[in-house]
Structure formats: C-alpha cells, structure tokens
Amino acid sequence: ICRVRNSLNPTTKFDVAARKMSVNMLAMLAVVACVPCVFSEPLPSVFAHGMGDSCFNDGMKSITAALGAHRGSYAVCIPTGDTQSSDTDNGFFMTMDKNVDVFAEAVRKDPKLAGGFNAVGFSQGNSIVRGYIQKYNDPPVSTFLSVHGTVVGVASFPKCDPSGLLGPVCKLLDRYLVGPIAYTKFAQNLLFQADYFRDPKQVDSSDYKANSQMAQWNNEGNTVDPTIKENFAKTKRFAMIKAEKDTMIYPNDGEWWGCFDTDGSTRLAMKDTRWYKEDLFGLKTADEAGKLFFNTTDGDHLQFSEAQLYGWADQYFLE
Image 1 (tube, rainbow, N blue to C red):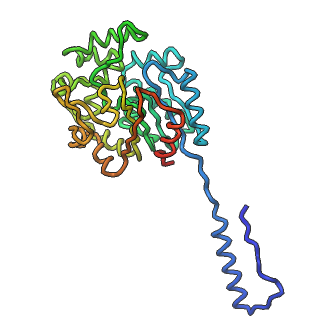
Image 2: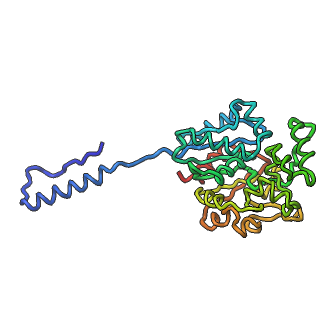
C-alpha cells in the first residue's frame, strides 16, 4: 500500500498560495510514489530432451524442477509422446519436422507459456527448439540456450555402436545414411537422426537439396522460405554451449553454428559458412545485432554441472 506521510506541522502558518503549492507538490509526490513497482516473475523455462531420453525420466524431471526453483519461475519439459516409451521412441522414429509440430502444439496449449519463454535444449533437443523458432516462434523464445546441440546437423554418428544399447537404430543409420540413399524421401522419413544428418560431400547434390530436412531449415535447398529468417529474428538471444571434447556431435563446431567444408575434413567456423555469409536463415543478422553468445564446457557430451546450468541461465536469460 502506497502512502504519503504529511510531514508538515499543522500549526505552521502559510499564506494561501504557499499552502496550495504545498498541497499540489504533495499530490504530485503521491502519484509518483504510488506507481506500483512491478516485480514480474521471470519467463518460464522450457526444456527439450536429447536422444534416448524422455521428459518422464527422473533426470529430466529433476533438472527441470531445479532450474525452475533457481529462477523462481515455471519450468516444464515438453515431451513429444504421451508416455516415457513413446516420448523416447519419437526421438528416433518420428521425423524431426513432426517432432517440432508436436512440441509447438504442446507449447500453445500451455497457458503459462502464452507470454513467451526461455528454451533449453540438450543435444538433439536443440533441433526441436531450432525448428520451433524457425517454423513458429509464437509464443516467442526469448533466449535459446543450446547445450551441446545438433543445431546445424552432424556429419556422422561416431558414438553409435551397432552392438550397444541403441544397436537397432545404429544399424539403420549405418544402412541408410551411407552413400546416395541418405537423401531419398524414404530415408529422410525413416529416422529423426536422418533429418539432421548433413553429409558435407553431398550438400550440392540434387537429392540433398530436394529432400533433406536440414537443407530446408538452412535455406540451402531448392527453395528459400523467407519466414524462417523472420521467425529467427524474433528470438532475442542465442547462447551456444560447446563441449570441447564432444565425441557425440561431429564435428562439435556445429554446436557453435560451424560445419565441415565440402571436402569433408576442413572445419569451418560460423563466419566462414555459406549460411552465415549469405545470411540464409538469419544467423548473420542475429550476430550483427549482438544476439549470439558462446561458451564451452571442458568435457564430453552433456557433461556439465547443475551450477553451470544455473550460471548460463543467469547470464543469458534476459527475462
């Protein structure tokens, strides 16, 4: 409650003009003092999990709740399946674009996200967040915090062991992402991972330009979608966290918007890529506007502490 305490001694004698002036000044002070100080709650945080994970897993539940408590705001992990198993499976057997559509529908159905939110992506989840930004961004992402992300795709899957836990998926990747079949419509509709597989030696091929989902997102295909740049510009900050010893995202330059050159071995930093030089999806515009931020972790893929996550959120979230 705003109150102005009258400190004037009522016995003091003023002439009428002075008394009126004092009253007017007090009234003005009252107006200024009673303007409410608006302490708005920080924007919500929305998480997108990585490959093989699920929003229903204890780890994702815990880290989502922890950041929400740290920020003092609503936090939610948005699955693309209704159960733990379907959410996990959809990270493999639902296309990248369809995952984005399901994610966007869930965002729009949550009234707590109607005013916008900060997005946190882990690994493959960053493809979903990037897709949401470029295809929808309504309600808008304020800051996109990409932790070890597949934002511009990968050139291979070096840690996918056909004899390991993800054996069946790795066998499919090995079968269909080697050679010219990678960019057929069949292969692109087979696996989420196929959609962000970007073979640097095939980026000039007609199949890549026509069928690759990554090519469409990068505006390096046969057609250019101007709404991608428009929606990209609605996000205020892009905080890119790269794992210095990442053995999952190859090359890890991609975590900072870089890639391999067409020879398949020369590493290109962000500003040396075609998508930056030609501003194909708005990255150069965002950089020149001071929206891009870069940080690193010392270890391997998704090796970071809770304290580091808090630090990134505190440093990069604007609202």
